[in-house]
Length: 231
Image (cartoon, rainbow, N blue to C red; front, top):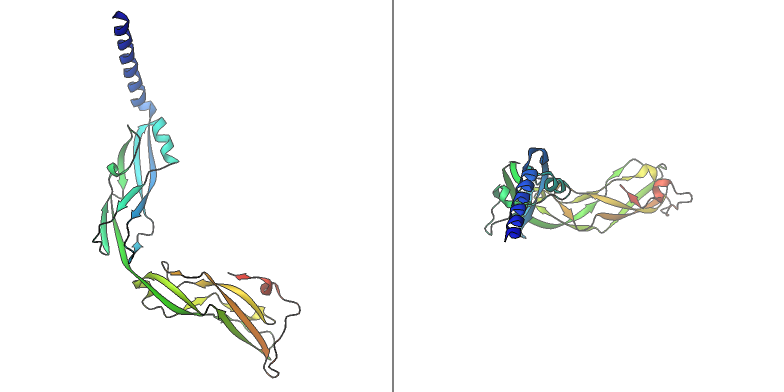
């Protein structure tokens, strides 16, 4: 009986010492972490347009050995949107929404509220246009450009797609071309949130003589003609 009592007293004393050490100010850390927002269940007919940066600055305090690992593996705010989502939703960020180790407390969240803006998602098919810059070195030659694919599908918010009637590629610099060739050109999307069904198109440039009407062949192609991708 005496031995059991001594063991219990020792265990209690050890627990008190550990609690003091863990909660001692010398073993407590206060750090700021960037916590991203994980937006879930966005309706298929909606797209988020604001904010572009979906994260909050969170300050936490707790035992150093628990707080330290949080910086390398921060928690996330999991945001569940309502079923009747409109184009504006105000989100309240709370410390209780974060999964943190025991004894770690949230001191502040900035911002504590965040406005999420949505727009209707639109999809449309538009033609591809290839701009030209410069002139052919030989004024007796002319260039015709054929692009593949000729049409691409764009998707994005209605506010960005409303006035879009076509999509341009990066331009072809005729001054760098001395004969018929082909090259890949990246598309220049008309909005920051617009996506295209393809990222690049192939432009076939046919250079012919105005008088003879015969193709001009490339004997010594320039560096730009050797490149497959023009950025």
